[in-house]
Image 1 (tube, one colour):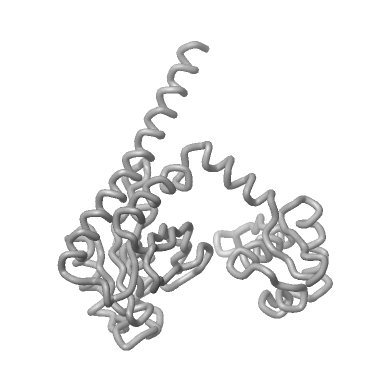
Image 2: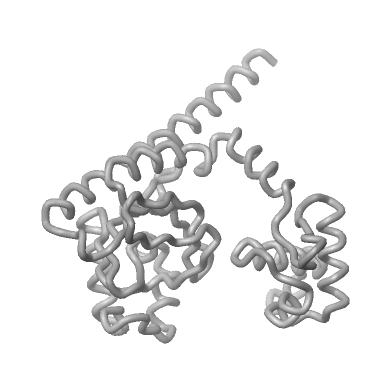
Length: 271
């Protein structure tokens, strides 16, 4: 194989099965026909994929409505990831504390390619709530956590976003490349991001970056809610709260890496 014709080691059936799981994670309760249309696959292929995933417990079929949702095996895998000291293990108690401290929505967001992904959420305690659903994809150029992640992304990611059409979700969405570049630079200087009305009109988001074991930004945590509650006092409180939460999660991930390294060293010494 030449460099211009690299080997493709992907397996089409696995790729399609993962598409089905991702679609059900984003919108549970879909049937064969709906999934077939949204994924661009034939009903026969979707049905066989669902049957296989159901047999292994990765999807659940409602016998009355003939629709599918994620199954128990997905939760089992998530629990095993948690026990390994990952982000999903370190973040939940900190998210709970941040929600209790602010009474606002709390979101844990990661970057997946040129999109943001809501990894986990905590619903606020106010009657008017803006609640981002876990599994929801979003743009990188709008939203508190998304912009925070973009600011700390590799130059290739930033360049790709700047080169693409910047969709306007509200009148306040940044759609100018130069203005977006300036905003990203300001986020890096401040160490946090405040987004107002740019993704959902009437909403604010205060976010801070979470560092992985190697010191790179791997996620963002945000406090989000309705603009009617966002005054100057809360602004300062939420900035501090988000920064402290991000720092606590980052520290947990760093500690887990150190402990894992010590364990490996001890095992090598014993051997």
